Image (tube, rainbow, N blue to C red):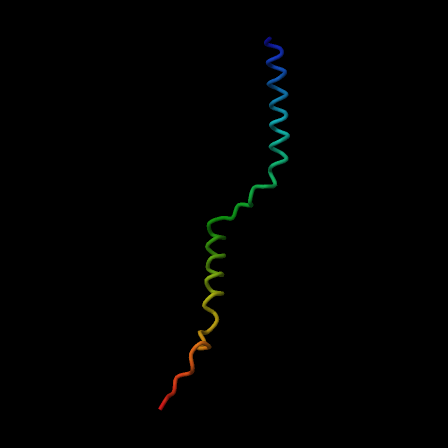
Length: 63
C-alpha cells in the first residue's frame, strides 16, 4: 500500500508541475507602482490637452 501511495504521489506532483508550466502565459505582466503613476499621469495629460470649443451653442456677441 505504501509503495502505491508513493508512486501516485509522485505522478500527481509531476502532473501538477506540467500543468503549472502550461498556465504561466495567462498571468498579466507586473507593472510597478512608479510605472503605473507615470502611465496615469500621461493619460491625464492627454485628456485636457484639447481646448474646449463651443460647437453646440452659438458664439457669444461682444458689444
